[in-house]
Length: 321
Image 1: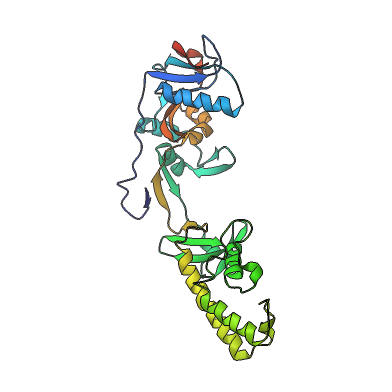
Image 2: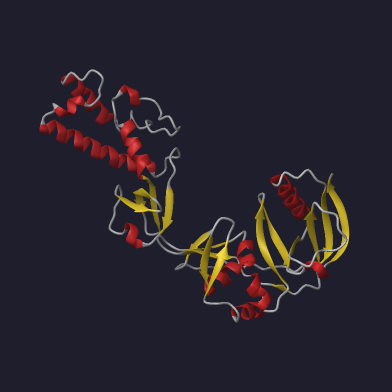
């Protein structure tokens, strides 16, 4: 659920991180003691087993998989549900913090970072300088390509790639027999030929017959009278307006939505945020952290221990041979 910042935020609340005395760790290795580096644990064996199984498949390892049951009760975990922990972390954080994800890095303000740790994410709107003053049917350049606005509300700017709309108009609004079929890359660019662009195409067919353009290649346009050209232009304008209305909800073509007001939503995964600030959590006096991770359709809490050499192994079970 997303909630606009200027609305009530009763549905967007900080997550409550649970402590656990027992944690489960998945591995392809057999050992009696953890090395003194970072290790991750889950609350139940299923999550740990699924994690290491997928990791083994990704690295193409044909190996036995083990789940270790461990005592993690003596670890001083940073818990973002605890206000005293937040205060300790705030004292060592800079104003802006660099965050690393799998494919990129970015910066978060200290305030936004704390909310991310608490399970609340803020999405900020597209800058007005890119689109302000534009209306439905007009285009603007953003994020590497030209976008056409198909809907504007108080909260959302809905757009499509300009090239997609250009191809729809080209294929649906043509009587050229070579453009009857769906375009070769799979999108149904010609799907509006017989309804949205019917009046356009009927008039073009009439003009082609009048000016002896047997194949409908558009040669007739150069022979048309000015009034006929104006009429065709009006028909096309009306068809494009109807096309944009249809595209708001049409499922064959990809739309993008940009928010116009910031909104907050609850996260299901923030482990990468935590892992980006381990140095600060350690500096604040903690030995690990509790985060959230969404994995293979499941979401649970994970427990990171920065120096796992102190962890006591209670049991080791073969998960898959």
